[in-house]
Image 1 (cartoon, rainbow, N blue to C red):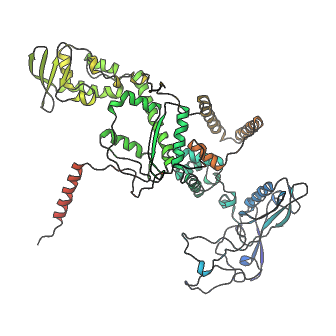
Image 2 (cartoon, one colour):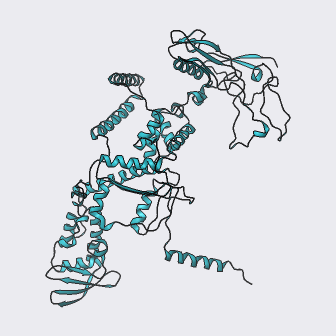
Image 3 (cartoon, helix red, strand yellow):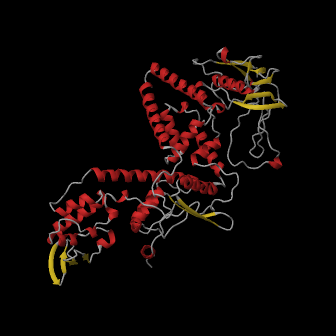
Length: 603
């Protein structure tokens, strides 16, 4: 086959020849063909000096972007950046080939086309079955650039091979060139922020694609994003038990009211950990009587507990399942838990604000309902109001028996069942056989009827539990050491947090206002660039390494010495399904027996 020269066209050309990828173009004269036998497959090897595919491709571009022999750079990194820009412009990927050093540093640095060389074939006796299929990329391309250090410390282009032995990548696919793809610090920060907000890797990439206009502008592929998350898991592998304990210690240092404790087994593996920040401890001091503990559970990936015994626990389980799954590392669970807890507390603040500054509509003209609206939170009042309406519409006095100061009243309701209320006319103490107050802390419809008939316009004070009132959360609480059980649990200054939030908002508004006008966009681009330059002049801006970014994400430095190891990985699937109670198991067994009887064929 005759060799032909095909020039890669500059941007704007409509000719595909010499530009589009063609992985299946093989030349008979450049590779040795082997017999098509499935038991004797070998990677093609080069047998002549002719270029791969029998063709040479001469890239063409703006002369200012093309390297030339003798071109100088202050550092070899600048030369590498220039060559990568050139490679992106004409359509090929770059990788480092060789480096030669002397006592003064790098003497020679060579960068080659990513398709340089040939894939090495392992000897038959050493060959193992690959874990996954791979595609061949090497085709013996000789395009390269060589940089050599001069006496003045600068680097000169000492060798440059322009021709390629394969077709070049078309403009529409140049964003896929590997050497130009990078999960930058900005993108890693976005990814980690999305994970903190319980947004997965794929969804985070879609968000960035929309934010930046298209996937081509992101700077990397979705697979690169997934690999970045893999790198995070590798960085914390084997250390997340130690890391989470270190996080707890830093939390406690920032706020002494933060409490935690943990247990390890004989192998120093973390088996239990308990923590409660100042707000959790305050809530427990105020509402501890209504805390439900989960006594049935099933382990997940690192034996975290889940499950439920009451309707309240079921609600909490649904809350935890929203942000936890069996594939999360312990640190990822912690970060997501913090986010979810913050979201829950924000909702509580909104409800508290609504209770203080708005009033629900009344459904009766009874004064006792109006009093309940004044003292109870909205959620508690909604249940009290249902009892008031039921007392008005469905409850009737059936009998009254007076013995001294105690009056016993029989009251029927919608169901027809008669409830008995014992009422002390002196102390206004009441007890109903339905025991709703003892269960929920809210007086029932039957007691409300009695109070109404006794001329009580307000709920007796002994039946208004402080924990259900609007002012409950405003009570100050202290731990045994005198620390107030409410306060900051982070070292970040509130002023900085506020300024950061306001700056992000203003930046987004300005970008939205400028994005449809080139003149405005250029002005905004210049302003941001000038601001960054000014920040550099105010002090050195040191870029964080990948590990430092991961440490910033979790809130502590990764340990150099690990004394607390992560929990064992459990083999069970799922993120904490509820174990069935005995009664439920009995019902299921009966159903199974019934189904098995139905399946027995007639004889």
